[in-house]
Image (cartoon, helix red, strand yellow):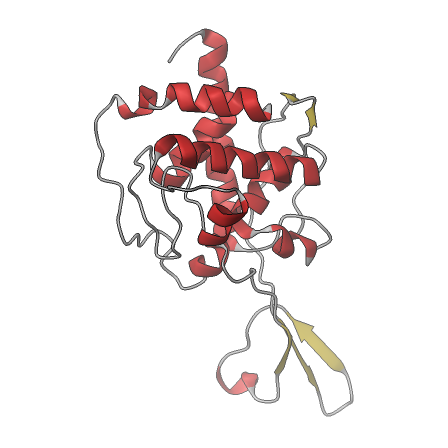
Length: 226
């Protein structure tokens, strides 16, 4: 199942269509040959007596070291250090860093806000079960690649996460959907599916959550609200 590529950046001025479809799809493929020599295929794991003779011939998994690969363990939100900051002012506390990152990397402010909201709920101390850390939940390899010295410093973390978004936006020619999906699952996972959104349930849920938040922040900015 492929997701329509409904959003593109033109010099980072986004014209987005709401209602991007996000659905789950099984990525493993099973096959068997019956007594008549007919070859059968299914993407639903065979169970019970009818499973005898079936073989798995294709296994597609997220790249190791991505948030999506950890999500397959069945506990996507089992953070080692969960978000504990509940102060209402946390949503405006990092405005200066967000604006700096948006200007430096030519990204929409609502996009950076949306990613922070979904990733860490604006708590810079969050550590996920996958090892992602800080506001935008940077993985260790990303910290190194994006030259983040102190991942728990809000400014460094936000600039590092925004830098990654900029790199991905360049790679996918401004495609918002693919940029967000790659932030979660990694570019390698998208490449397995012809540079489309991979059929990983948690990546698609993540994509929907970030897009929903993006539209909310975008609408609030257009109203002049906070």
